[in-house]
Image (spheres, rainbow, N blue to C red):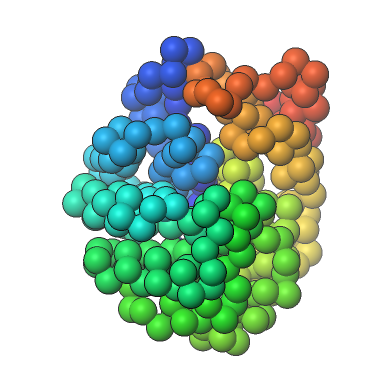
Length: 291
C-alpha cells in the first residue's frame, strides 16, 4: 500500500510552542516537490507526546486537508492507553487519513498477549489500514515477530515499522507474515539493507533534511540495485547518525530550522539543540548536500 521514503515529519512550532500552520503547509509542498512517497503526521518526530488529544486530532486534520490527496498521510495515533489509541485512530479515519501508525504501548510494559489484544482492539474498533510500530529503545517493550504474525491475520493491520535495527527480523517477519505484509524500517542507519533484504521502505527522520536523496536511495534499494543504493546512501550516513546526537526530534528540528523551513519552536520537556552539538549536525547536513 505504501512504499519508499516516508518522512516522519516534524511539527513546526513558534518559539512559544504554538503550531505554525504556514510552515506546515510549506513543508508538505516541499516534500511533494522532492518526491517523498508518504508523510507520517504527528509521530515521535512530530512531538506527539506533547500534543493533547484535541490538538493531536486538529493537526492530523490540517495535514490531510492541505495535502488534499497529493500525497498519502499516515497519522500517528498510538498511545499506551488502548482507549486513547482507539480515539485518536477514529479521529484520523474521520478526517480522511490514509492509514494510521500505532506505536506499541510505552512505559507500562505489556506482555506479548497484552500487545496482541491492544492492537487487535484498535483494529477491530476502527476500519482503517493500520501499521504497527515497534521501537523498544523508546517504549521499553519489544513486539516479537510471532506476535506480529498473529496481528497480521487481522485484515486492516497491513504492516510494521520495525525500529530495532535487527536486520534478521526482516526474513523472520516475511516468513511469518507472508509477502503482502509490509515491512518498513524505523532506523535510517540500517534502512538501506532492510530494503535490499526485501523490505518495503522506511519511515525516516533523515528525509526531513534530505528528502530527494532519501527518495532516490529508497527507490534503488527496493529495486535491488545495491551499488546505486550504496552510492546514494553514503553521503547520508552522517545524517543517519548525527540526527540522534540528542533525543529525536531535537537535532532534526534544529536542522530543518537551519534550512529556513520552520521557526525555532519545540515543546518542553524537549529543548533546543545544544550549542555544542550544532556543528556536528551542520557538517552532516553539508555532507548530504542539504546546506
